[in-house]
Image 1 (cartoon, rainbow, N blue to C red):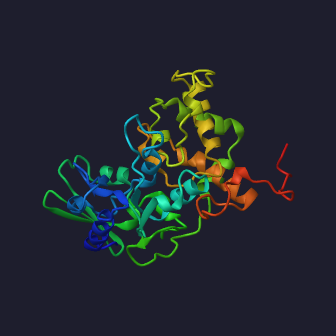
Image 2: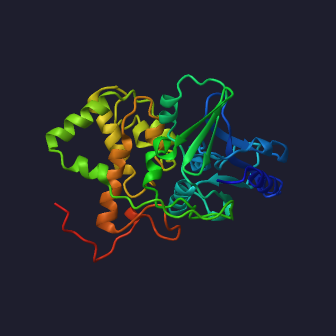
Image 3: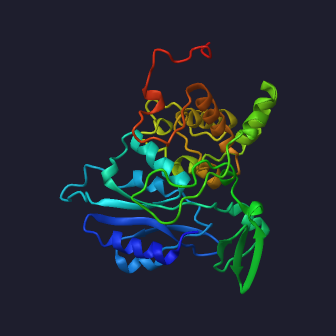
Length: 327
């Protein structure tokens, strides 16, 4: 696990640079075990920064929300760099964003955090309900140690570990300017067991399954807003002229919404799992995204977010591309 004092020392140096306007990192949340994003603009604020297994947010999302040209009349654009802390899975979002020319590499400073795994906060809160005072989570060996209300609880790592971490291929960031700890070996190869189980169901069973899941959707758009790859300025799902999708919260419109999102993320989703994490009605969105991810890997031998120099999958064509899957 990253040494917090080392992290703060490096962050202080970065924020003090004249060519850096802010650093996006993590700080302690206001209640329970949660950590939250921190936007550091001065060296005096650096002591707020932390890194622990509770730092689950993918901070790459905020890079595409940065100020864009043109700026309001009378203002000058701030063209200084933005620094960001990223875990291994988060760094893939940076790579994919740069593949798509969302910004140039020299516009960001990347502090890479080799990650030994983060917690699934839902699992934590089910195990320790109603913890309102601030608590902390640390990883010691093969156990998560939770400290709260003067207590110290040890839980086997496997019980609280986020599912995405159990199949993580890239725990060490793929892009960084400074690496804040030693590299971490790949956790496991992904066998897509969850996707294979879903594929074995009949068409009727699949429809019944997803109909039940999508019927819960309240169209809050949290999944879209948190996704580091949903950064289009003009989202087709928001258009009113022509209106491709109604605002109705019903199974038809909900299904259209989620299928449209999944298709737009084909070859782009980097499996950070943020969409599913923030869903207030617990729709297993990653099951859908991972189906597309598996198909893209098998059909095109392509993994999004792994090569910043490569062109985006759907922006390329080769004369020897396979066509046996085309109807």
